[in-house]
Length: 112
Length: 113
Picture 1 (tube, rainbow over the protein chains, first blue to last red):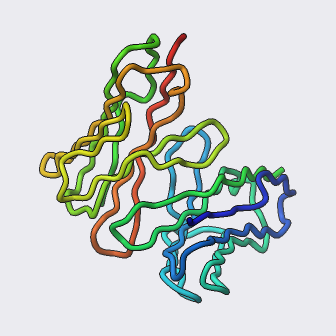
Picture 2: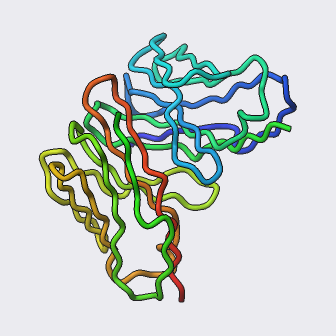
């Protein structure tokens, strides 16, 4: 069976510090991968998606970047965090464009 | 631009009641619609997936319908239980422009014992 792992579960970082959140998927190959952010009281916003190694599409201009160094690894990064980067970050995967999406347990990021 | 709206934003019902959550979307060019459950501080759990060619899907006490032409979906929960308390999100996977999934803001459900 397929599983998706996200870590860390919670993170408190000072403004201006770097960020690296990692997501890995097990039990499948060549998944489509996604990073979402959920701000307090708001819906999920798609940040990045990837259809293959090294292929990253950005949905919104922002202070964050994403990378896919391996088939089942998706990394969300920032060189310098802003207060507005605080939120709940979710990684997801799907096999094809018309199949179910499965989500990780999320990372609660607080920038102070 | 695809927009997804969920009504109501919040709902409180007594245990045992049947209830309906509503989801509407503006662009019918979708691959599928998926209903999720999210518990506080947790990730999303997939409940039901309806392909664009389907009208409904059922899983246990849950039934989801899809009317693509009118841009609407409903999630029916039968005989609600306190354990059903959570936020329910609907999301559509749009055709074209990659595999973007657009989410509604969710309906926060509270089932009172």
